[in-house]
Amino acid sequence: MTTVPPLEISLMPGDGIGPEITDALLHVFSVLEPEVGWEIVPLGLRAHEEHGDALPPQTIDSLRRTGLGLKGPVQTPLIGGFRSPLVRLRETFQLYANLRPSRHWLPRDGAPPLDLVVVRENTEGLYSAMETHAPAGDDPQGLAIATCWNSRAGSERILRFAFDYALRHGRRKVTVVHKANVLKKLSGIFLETARQLHEEAYRGAFEYEEMIVDACAMKLVMEPQRFDLLVSTNLFGDILSDLTAGLTGGLGMAPGANIGREVALFEAVHGSAPDIAGRGIANPVALLLSAALLLDHAGRTASALRLRNAIALTLRHGVLTPDLGGEARCMDMAQAIVTRLV
Image (cartoon, rainbow, N blue to C red; front, side):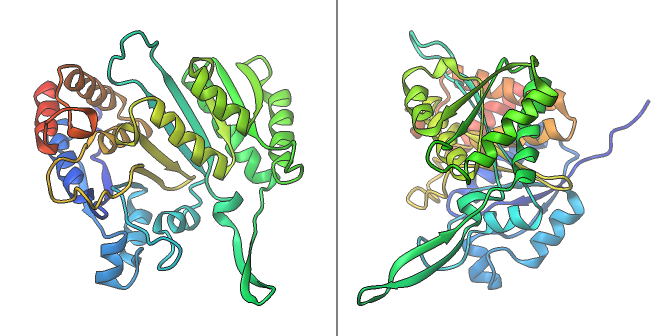
């Protein structure tokens, strides 16, 4: 009988509610996958305060060793301060594919269930822009300039990831989202690459459509059931993935994955919620669903299915944190999930 070696995972609790939902995750995994080796490493505002860097070298070294990371939310200053450690991680390990599934986990009266996936390019576009100021009139910084890019190679890489994901997971339709009607070069290279790749390698494999991003946002709100998998460039994908999360229960239910060739990082995509930190009422579901994505990626599909089923049963039986309209505390939900795992 072949034994499966235990997983080694770099765990970054992060800031705000991050340590609380991380404790809930560890409690669930003590039953689900007790052999996992957790290497807890710093990331975010607290890491910056304690180590002088929001992304300390030991965190990078840990991810290089394990190849798998799971992170809670981090707090990043607006406008000034340090640069987002998540953006730095994406660049350091070329985590080019951002995977954001959104589905209804709670029954909704009269509304058909939604199960959507947004695939977002993670390393180019405006998130990787070079920014500067220039004078305008009497203001020496009166003009803000960003120089950004999308490459044909980067576009093909993320489109191939999305098309292959659609095939592996039985997705019926892929929507390529762009703004090539206005950004004829920046967005046009992405659309041209999508057309060429689909025609050469994926024709007939699934329903294929193209949609301008503003029209897509409107139709997602009005007719979300018409969509299945959406793929787009960095900024558009970021905005649309939050929109789809809002359609299916909010960011407290939204998992995310950042996937590269050698390292994969999974995250709860919501913020650090400092206003409720330490009160024990945070919703751990997004982090747990992100851990399910990690288990899928690592080939532990049976454990991933067990975890999702336990979460679904817990929610359907009314164990809900305050953000979902209930009164359960963070560890109450974790314990209810553990009960359904056993």
